[in-house]
Length: 302
Image 1 (cartoon, rainbow, N blue to C red):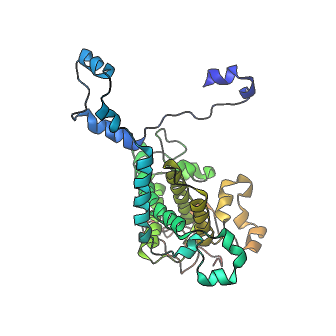
Image 2 (tube, rainbow, N blue to C red):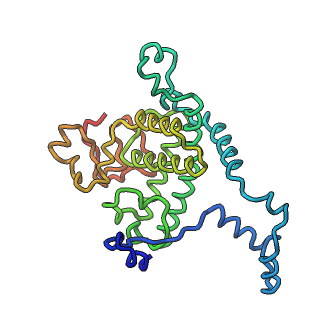
Image 3 (cartoon, rainbow, N blue to C red):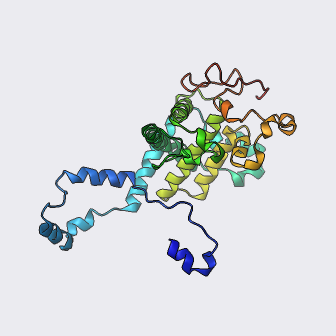
C-alpha cells in the first residue's frame, strides 16, 4: 500500500492510518471444523499437492456457493422473524393504513409497502443476534487485553464505531454495560414493552443496530429502496431527536452544558451520563445503571 501511494501522483498526499485483514467468521469456522474432519488436507505434502491440483468433479461444482439461493434463504428467515418485533406496528416502518390514505393523499407516493416493512422488521431481529454475538466478542477481547478501545491491539467489531473522543473510556467494564444495554433494549423491542429509548447509551446502541441491519441486508443483496426507506422511517419514529449525533462532532463537545443546549432542551450527553435515564419513566437495566457516585440526571428531557 505504501508503494502504491508513492507511485501514484494523485494519491501523493494520502497517508495510511490503518491497514488490516479480518477473518470472515462463518468461513473461518468452516475451516476450523474441516481441520479435523473428512475434508482436512493430507499430512503428506505430495498427497496434498496431488489433491490440490486434481480437477474438480461435477459434484464439487454443484456444491459451490449459490449467492442467489443464500439470499433467498436469508430473506425467508427475516420475513419469518418479523413477527418477533412485537413493539412496532407496520406504521412505524412507514406503512400507511386506510385512514392515512384518506387523510394524506400526498403521502401515498412516499408510503412503504407492507412486504418491505416486514422485511425491514425481520432484518432488525436477524441483525440483533449478529450484533449481540459480536459485542460479546468485543467484551472478551477488551477483557483479555485489559485495554480500552483506543489501546486495544486486537480487532474490535463495534466499539471503534462509538464516538472517538471517548475511546479511552471504552474498557471491559464499559463494554459489559453497553452489551447489557443492547440486550435490554432489544428485549423490549421483541416482548412488546418498548415505549421510548431510555438513555444516550440506547440511542448509540440503536445506531449500531441500524448499521448492522443495513450491512446485513446489503451483504445478501436485499437492501433495495423500499426496505431502506422503511428502516429510515423506523429510525425517525423511534428516535425522539438526533442529538446523539453531536457526539461524533468534536465541534459540538459540551453543547449539552451550554446556554444554547439548555435553550434547545438537549439532554446531558457527557460520557458519565450515558447510562443515566432521561427521566424517571425510562428503564435502564440495573447491571448497566450508574453507580451511586455516577452522574444523576437533573434535566427536564421528556
